[in-house]
Each structure stands twice: as structure tokens, then as C-alpha cells.
Figure 1 (cartoon, rainbow, N blue to C red):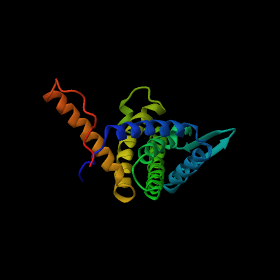
Figure 2: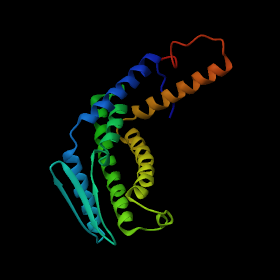
Figure 3: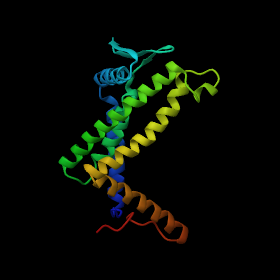
Figure 4: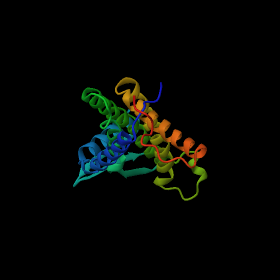
Length: 208
């Protein structure tokens, strides 16, 4: 796939829109998604034979696994993948694409992020309850011992899968735009190294 040729003005507008949309997602209420995340995680754990429960009271959502140790975790906004969906919405909505494509892209991103988030939560709770190797090599283990590396891995892999899937099956303009921005930035750096005395260009790339 070739990189899309973009003007500097479009890139600046795109980045500004991305920042605003991602920020606005912080104000979307998350209680319903928290409950759905806890309920689905409990269901996933119960499918493999574990005793598990979830509850929501006074805006606080919890998930409890009765394993080797009983582990109760709070399902907060950051556990629901809403923030990552906000990032995806920020990447998709400013694109030069039809509204049908953009809405399809956001819908697919939401489904994928939710589906990928459930095993992340289930695995974190399971490993904490059963204290499995190789985490047993870490002294003074807590929930965060399991949470940070698992969330980091799922965050990178899940976001990459989502971007690729949306670009392939819903909104191809996403990959074209991201490649165009990276290509333009790489070109600007290269020009700066080879032509140090040349003035700033008006465009990241010349627009066709």
C-alpha cells in the first residue's frame, strides 16, 4: 500500500481533531460499559469452570474470583477499553472518508477492543488468584505485578490488531493517512539532514 500524499495543513487539522476527540471521550459515562465488562469477564471465567461473581453498587463495579485465593478487583473506566476506543475514534473521525466508512470503522474498533479486553481482565484476575509461574519469581507480589505486564502486552497487540482490522475491513483511509503522515515526517527529517540551510517546506508532501 502506498502512502497517501498529505498537505501540512491537513496533517495539523487531523492531529488537532484527534486530540480534541480523544479528550472528549473522557466525559462519556462509563458505568454501563463497566458493568458489561465485569459481567462478560465473569461469564468467560465461569466457562472454564471457575466460581466467579460480579456486582455494581453506588457506581462501583467489582469482579470476584474464588480461586486458590479469593481476588476482588474494581472494574473502573480504565478497565473498559473506552479510553483506547477514544483514541481510535480520534484517528478515524477526522479522516477524509464517507461517514458510512467512518462509523463502520468505529463500530468495528469498539467490538474488537471489547472482545480483546475480556481475556486481559480474566487472565489478570486468574493469575492473581492462582499465583502462577513465572510471576512467582517476583517477591511481594500484588495485583499490579500481574496487571502491568499483561495490560502493556494486550495494549500494544490489541491496538495493532484493531488498527489493521479497521484499515482492512472498514476504513482503508486510516492506514493510508497514518502511512502518509509517517512518510511525510520521515521525508522532512531526511531533508533536514541533507539540506540543513533550506527553508521550511509549506507541505509535508505535495498534494495531488
